[in-house]
Amino acid sequence: MKTIDCLEEALKMFEENSIRQAQTLQTGNYKIGNKYFDNKMKCLSYIYKYGKLKELEKFLAHENVGVRESAACAQNLARCDTFSFIPSILERKSDHFHHILCDFSI
Image (tube, rainbow, N blue to C red; front, side):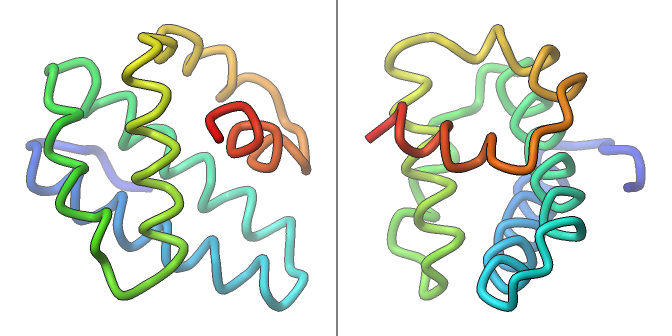
C-alpha cells in the first residue's frame, strides 16, 4: 500500500479497498481480502488521526455494499470513540476479525 498523503487520497483508498475486500470475500479468497482489510484500516487510522471520520458519511449511500458496510461500521465505532484500538488490529492477523468488527458495531 502506498503512503497516504492527504484526506482525499485516504478516502479514495478506503473506497477502493472496501470494494476489493467485498469482492474477495464473495469469491472466498480470504487471504487477499485480509490484505485489503488491513489497507482499509490504515486509511481509517489516517482519517481518524485528522478528525475527519464525518467524511465517511458520503459512502453510506454508495452503490457497492462493501463500501456501505465499511462506512457504517466505521461510523458506529466513531460514535463509541473506539478507534484508539486500530493499531492493535493492524498487529493482529486474524482471518475473521472483520466479522467481529461488523458484529460489534451492529
